[in-house]
Image 1: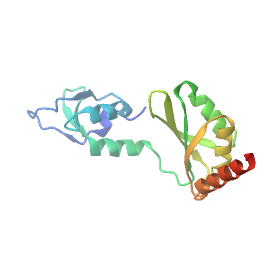
Image 2 (image 1 turned 90 degrees about the horizontal axis):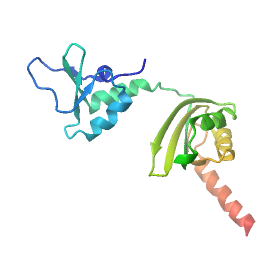
Image 3 (image 1 turned 135 degrees about the vertical axis):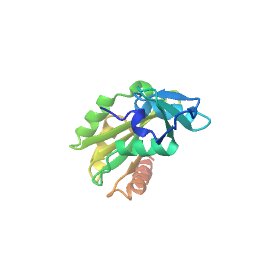
Image 4 (image 1 turned 90 degrees about the vertical axis):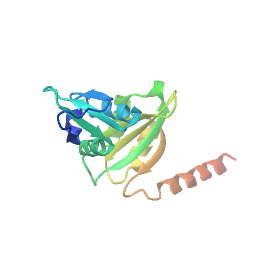
Length: 169
């Protein structure tokens, strides 16, 4: 059972006080609540309960609830890849990660524009370099890497690209 809107209610409204104009059912998943809250000018949504009571979700309460959905891990790295929307496959990405003998912890997809996606992967390893190479072999464009052991990853990639350019001349 995932986190629902009722799990993020910041406070109950006293009887007789009006609920915000934007309303959401208490059983709606939090990931569906976020875009609705951002579209609401007051940055506040009323949450209806089965008994008819009205609670309220605001930005702070939603952020706190979403934060509880993500387990803190200190043995993980984050890799961001970009691909065309037509090439996106969660199972293909998971297979690429697992082919490097690393476990996929989280995957979040964000549209960049109409045709491209940025996929954020949290993987259980401190040095994600083997996973980065595996993702590249699978045809994914690695946009960024955050890990404990890869502080010099971007500089190393720049050096490799420069070397590659010189060798092709």
